[in-house]
Image 1 (cartoon, rainbow, N blue to C red):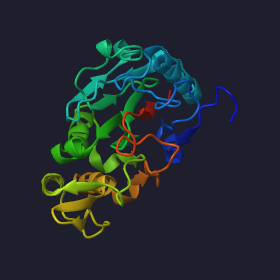
Image 2: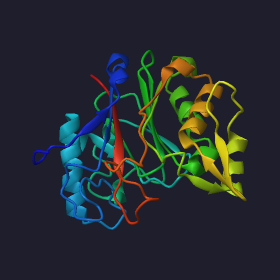
Image 3: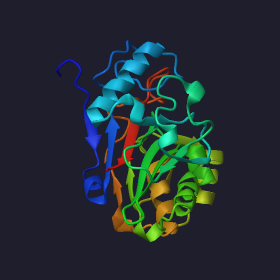
Image 4: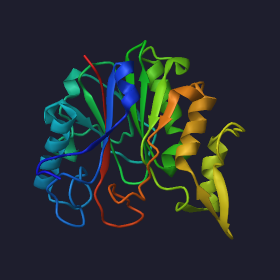
Length: 265
């Protein structure tokens, strides 16, 4: 790989919806192990100057300056924030000015790049191409159990979006074949997720008191139960078992990759 090359995993369907959506990998940055190399998280113990340089490289690969991005201080919750031009650059160089205590960013302003960081949780982009509303969601098991995507749909509805017009992209997340959870977690997620005969299994028994959980399937079901058409929900087909991506369950400490999303002008 050439120096300064930052690979992006793009959602090809976004362009036709008036949006641009991509996921970074762990390649193309300047951070040293265990954050090697494109760590985008300021909160994991990496050198701040390295993270800022990595973010600038990721922004350039996405086709924007770093100042066009907006980061949130993610807390595994369901708070949504609608951001506009006044929020440009928030959180890019410090968590102090990031959108506080927020796991859902929504915008109607073209050119603003919403950034959601993950390292096993599900990063989700939501686009209503008719209403021109964009959402980006961070959904770990806590956010999924609390209905993060449902909160995102509500926030988008406040801007004129409708579930039946929304297209969704679920990015790389923890491999369901490796994601063992307790009875407590399994119950919390399943109670918030409607049964669905049209989808793959949500939970598989793994050991006494433990289950294998498919977080992507859980969020897909929640979207469908809220009225998002099944054929409008796409997936990356990748998991964080891929060595090109960071996985907090596989290695701690580790870096964070990100889903980047914007409405095109």
